[in-house]
Image (tube, rainbow, N blue to C red; front, side, top):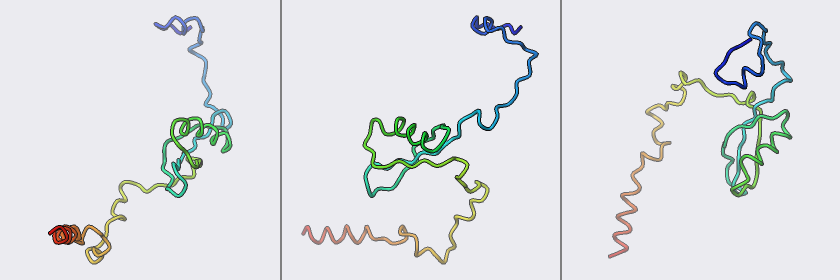
Length: 123
């Protein structure tokens, strides 16, 4: 018998020698990623996860979990196993070459021109 500081564990009379088998595939719920859309036409934003036996139940759980308090136009759920992500050591794939700086809007100094225009209009 297993001795514990918690009397509830002692009352359970757990056998320490008993082998615990891992859960089977159908003994645990699947993890689903939840995406929330506040207003129609806006983008969906990842808000968290739910654990559910299937996609329909995941939608119900997501509705209860993530749309009770705020406005909601739409919810998406997808199995977490379907999400593919880049590895952090592959960060070099996001680097741009120096020849393509024209694609970065921060390169253009437009705010100086806008301020000068506003000053001219104010005079």
